Structure formats: C-alpha cells, structure tokens
Length: 130
Image (tube, rainbow, N blue to C red):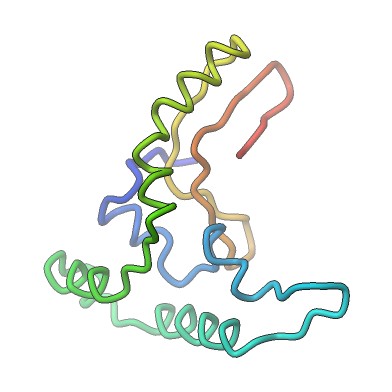
C-alpha cells in the first residue's frame, strides 16, 4: 500500500475514476428493495467520465486543480471530520494502546472501489480499517 498524504493532487489522482467510500451511498439505495436512483446514475456517469479523461489533463496540476474546485462536494460535516481527524486518532490511541498509521487512498484490487480510511490499526494478525 503506497503511502500518500490525503487531499493532495496525488491523492485525488489515485481516487479518480473510482467509486469512493465517501460517495458509495449514492449508489446503494435504501431499504430492503432498494432501487437505483437518479443520484446513483449521475454518480456512475461521473466516475465513468473520470475514467475517460485524457492523461495530459490529469497530469497538468493547474487544469486538474480547476476540475477539483468545480467538483468539490465537501459538506460542513466532512470539513468538521477532517478538522478533528488527528485528535480522534490520538484519542483512539490513548484509549486502546494501539498505534494508528495514516494512509492515502486504498483500492480494492480488481475493482473500481477506493476508500481513504482515517487510519489503519495493526494488532498482531488483525488489521482494522475504519
């Protein structure tokens, strides 16, 4: 697993064209007989569009940053979570005695799913990922 700082251009590039943990709710639906919604279709169209982006567009820092600025969907709750993430990791370490390692984007091999956990805890043979 390659380590990278979250919310950097490298991190956004690693997540580009993937269904991410923070956005998967858009395609999950609700209830026992969930149906695909327009929000789900719209999100999948966005992911597919990202997969089709020209590499020179993605590699150009200025152009790519402009794209990210246009696509920013960060909510107040997400900003608050980011603001308190370091404190939460510290409190967890104090409460459990475990060491939390930070990571960038983690992709499920062979799929288009990616997520960026707040931290990874390794305790002997068990890895807990939030």
